[in-house]
Image: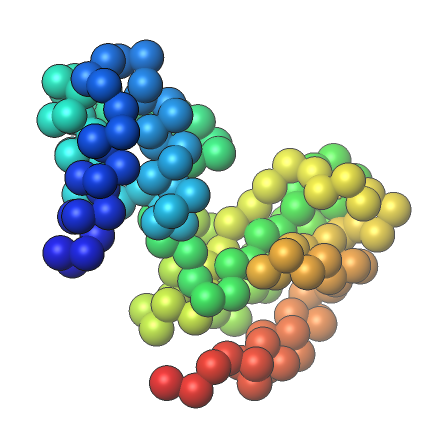
Length: 158
Ligand code: FES
């Protein structure tokens, strides 16, 4: 926790207290932390002398910002038109059922998180899922359990 705080303070010290720096600060914080924690957002609001609600509003408005941590295996199901029509929503629901989390959540053990995106640019493989940067083409709800079992076997030992 202390190391997180010092990382935030150090990063903020590179930026003058000006509202125009808000987006770039949030972007850099997310690159460093993987997401925007509540503590980080409060520090940013104090540093820029903005209200917490304004900073939280910006962080939750833009889709590129995450306010929740990702799992070791972040699972992103494409819900772009081609994937949606090919059953992407059913695949998303199958992951949610299998992992017992909803879209936007992370499993308690932090192994998996689940989200959706618009299009990965490989629509001919629809429906596709991106897991930790690897594309899984033509996924069906029936294949989801097997995918999860294989990923569990790839988890690092504690
Ligand atoms: S719509 Fe899913 S990859 Fe394009």
